[in-house]
Image 1 (cartoon, rainbow, N blue to C red):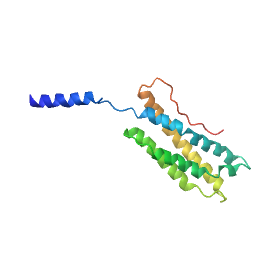
Image 2: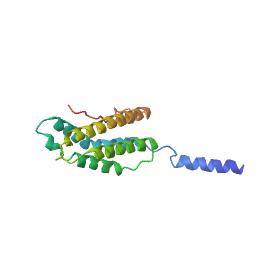
Image 3: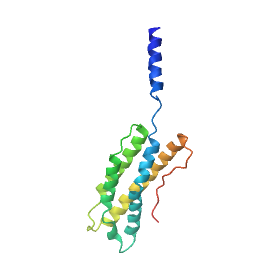
Image 4: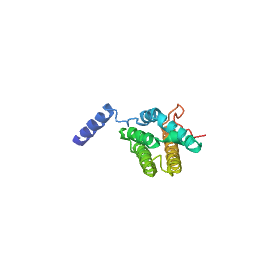
Length: 151
């Protein structure tokens, strides 16, 4: 009888507190939408790096990646799947930045192109995983994130 009362009190407490899992996916997606300006800037840089005479306009590619990384670092998540995807993007940015050299080095353009391509490829994968999670969560709105590839 006593065990039943304790169990009842515990279950009642969980139900009263909402007991359900907090939705971190929607706010996380909104945060990524706010950070989209950095990914768009990286895609513009990819075009600049392929265009003769415009490569100098991508001189701050490392700073843009660092700013994006700093913004991703600020995000605190409890959901282990969303957190894992956020960590994956952070690791990708760190790895891409390690490959970058100073803009006045002769290998700057190919290194920057490769670094941006690595970030693009990984972010597309993360976005598709987020989209799958979005659909599995039963969201009726269309998935709002899309990585715009450089043309």
